[in-house]
Image (cartoon, rainbow, N blue to C red; front, side, top):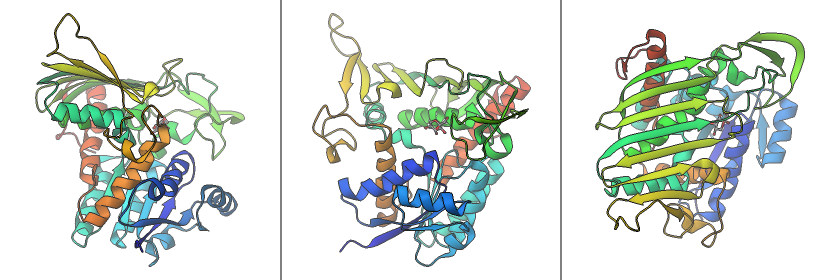
Amino acid sequence: MTPELRIAMIGHEFMGSAHSQAWRVAPRFFDLPLRPVMAVLCGRDPGRTRAAADRLGWAEAATDWRAVVERDDVDVVDICAPGDTHAEIAVAALAAGKHVLCEKPLANTVAEAEAMVAEADRAAASGVRAMVGFTYRRVPALSLARDLVARGRLGRVHHVRAQYLQDWIVDPAAPLSWRLQKEKAGSGALGDIGAHIVDAAQFVLGDTIAEVCGTMETFVTERPLAAEHSGLSGTAVSDRTGPVTVDDAALFLARFTGGALGSFEATRFASGRKNALRIEVNGSAGSVAFDFEDMNVLHFFDGGEDAAVAGFRRIVVTEPDHPYVGAWWPPGHVLGYEHAFTHQAVDFVRAIAAGVDPSPSFGDGLRLQRVLAAVEASAASRAWQAVEASAA
Ligand code: SOE
């Protein structure tokens, strides 16, 4: 009988639903050394949390996260609440000896992320694991891109071009949800979606960003107040407005430690683009290009081919040998957004069972937080900014 791994999840909105799906499905499609049990769902409102627990498949509903993280019958705490809660919950859960999976970005500030890493390092001594949830790296096509780079199929990497384009707040009447408030979200497009392309780029290259030069803009500075629980495009609840305190768009250039140059664009104002996480990498021997809006496909240019027939090849990443795909459907039967969350749950469970650091670890999350802080510092100073030097 496979031993249980009892999960408590904090938060049940968009990310909570995605993580619930992952915990539910992972043991049914993947061979896991531990069996995740969806033990407790924790939220602020008793009625809404109970309803979410029933809908999403959690055995119990609770409202006091402090009590939940202390429970002896909980092994993992999965944090899907807004960014301003991450540090406090993660530190308490790690101190109580629980493995922690925390949604991205790791925290709202570098200082918070540092405190989380310090606690994770202490807990690691007794076998406790901590991982940050950058799910897109677990899309099979992006994983394949990394494999191709690691195997030298692109040669020396010169360029990375990364974009994350959405349009869900281009309408000035879109409400002031928590993602538009600095005290809750830390930053706007930069931390919410820019963080994803920073992780994707560093993951695919197997390299880190050393310095950045960026600019940020808030196009709509006042918005109608939102219902407390409004989702991404929830409706406004009053005629009163409040200030938008985060960036709507963030653009920056980057130099990687290994010498590659990068350009990054994160915006929620790209009309018509819904969730276009795009990345193109050009090396001396080839290139890869990926767009999440066609997420089962990787474009690969092999510079070694005869020039007369060479060109970008469209690889449909659904073969059993492709990363993660063997557990799913026959070739050509494509995967979707939620599968990357399942792969994340699988990798986390396996890391816990194997007693190894999961990837990305809290340390990786902290390094990424420093990139975000460096972009903000650079935008404020209008100058290049070294990543390690940037403070909270
Ligand atoms: C909203 O911008 C959002 O849901 C992000 O918060 C997620 O991280 C991203 O996967 C999709 O867009």
